[in-house]
Amino acid sequence: KQLTLPPEEVWEFNLGKARRTKIGDHDYIAVDVDFYSVLVTDALTINRSEPALNVIGGKWSDSWILPVDSEFLLQRTGYACLDEYSFPKQTVESENVWVYYNDTCKAEHPQPVYDPVEIRCHYSEYPAISCVDALNQNVGSVNVTITWHRIPFTENIAKKYRFGKHTSNLPDLVGVNKNLLEQTR
Image (cartoon, rainbow, N blue to C red; front, side):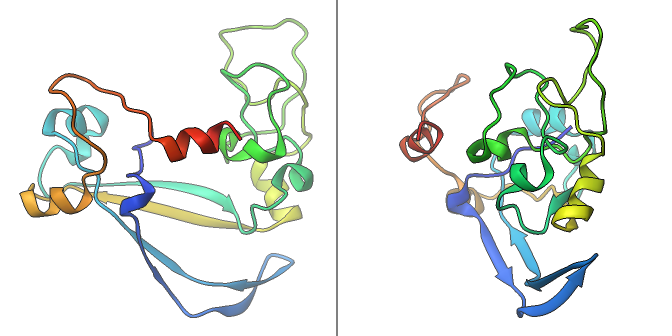
């Protein structure tokens, strides 16, 4: 399960001092980053999303293993970190790797017969190593944890972090032009 992130427009970052470091066999200039934002929602939605956040003060964390350098990830690690489940075969391209990224992908072999019930990462190419191994061998990896804290609702906080126009009291979906353009480039 994964909670969504708020829109980029309300992200806040605190950057540490740049330093040279080695991650595995990889030499990098690294910067520690603290991320903060607020996801504005109603009590019923958050309660259905993550029970640990049912109460004010509740906390829930989710962790990922990410590439230290995500440039050319497909070229460096092949399909090892790409989850094609629920996507048509042969749709992965180097420009859309972020859509398919999944650090839990394991080495897999082709299936003799397609089984739509079996959940797998790979359908186009079958890497011989897991995502984590491919990252560590080719680019280095970093463990990232995001912790959500349930805070009391205040109108001032909601105004600061609310994004877009509220158009209905019913479920609603409004396209954000910038995001639509990014997805269709």
